[in-house]
Length: 287
Length: 214
Image 1 (cartoon, rainbow over the protein chains, first blue to last red):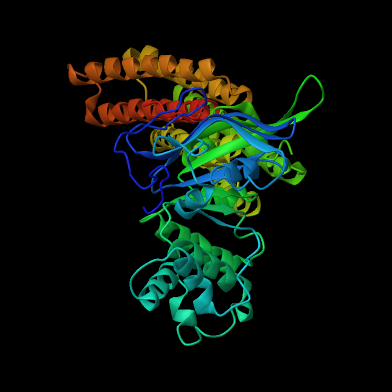
Image 2 (cartoon, chains in turn red, purple):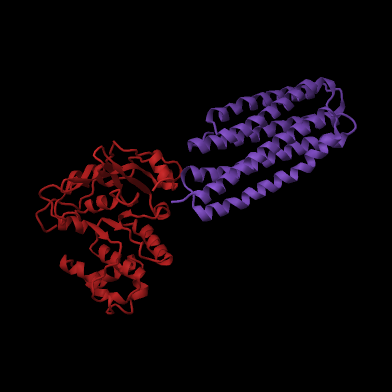
């Protein structure tokens, strides 16, 4: 790593386990790449999410679900300091990546986002060619080697290569929505991050394009760790290994705060949730 | 999110199971009457009535894929749907076992199947089976975990009676081989009836707790 920041690329072999949340069925055998420790996110004086502690397991898909306003996207964005540019936004607690706090003073947010990439709800390709969309991040990061090979590798991993290999110089905006989203995933993985954050990546896509992205997520866990925010509970049940359920709670002053209610293995959470609030939400008795 | 339609479907499902459990109880009582009171009419009713239990099981089996497709149930709802399938199967099997008992009575009619020395033990099994049927219906209605677990004790009583019956049959049974086979089968049918009721109770425990106990 060229810069003088904390080295974010080292991978510890020791699993870290976070107490303080219903973590049923979560063993300490699989390593966690990230850990949230009592993380609260503030917008000015408003505490949007309070006291979140949970692990993000390596090479697994972790889904965050919950009703609107429960803070799941806020927490997701806190994982790669995407809230930083919002005036007044601030994080307390620790967001650990391989044991190092991403909000420590010497950490460069640009480096954080290189290691922890993000795919957004709406596909947002640059108004450039398909090739340049993928090559862009490689160029600004000064990645060595043959650019063509890196672009092909990223597009192949994003399950898009066969569909675009003959039109790499065509505008990315000419692709379908599902293809654009896979292009954005290719752009994200081109710079070889360790973690990919996905904020409702399929909500603008039709079922077939959604199925392709979901298949892709499964493939990507060979190389990456994925955290996905989704409104679609069936999607969380289909794609994730672990699920975190958030809800919005109203305090004594009638102010709403997002809170993590339950974190557990996905099969467990959807067949036998430990918390009644989880049960009520996923069975449609609330929300 | 409205659950009205979903809740109606789940209610229908549990309603069918309740009727099935009642029918399985009626069947075992009828079979025991046919057997112990040498009552041909009772036996014929049990045999004829079994078709209804088979139909209801088929009804449950047809409802479940539809519930899964329409509502993608999770948590308690999902366990209910999975359990309903197994419970319907066990209740239908209980009906079959009552039919087997009734058919032995029919086969030997107008001669009685149970000689005097075996009467107490067979009567005991018949009473226990009827009691187990009642408790099964109650457990299905109340979904009380402790009551469900209690059913195992009644089942132990039937198992012990079957052992007594078998030891009677192998130690110089004076009524011939045919009678011994009839009684061995009867003991087996009551015992299996009770076992299936215990299976229903186990499903209720799983439904309520979400954990499988072996």
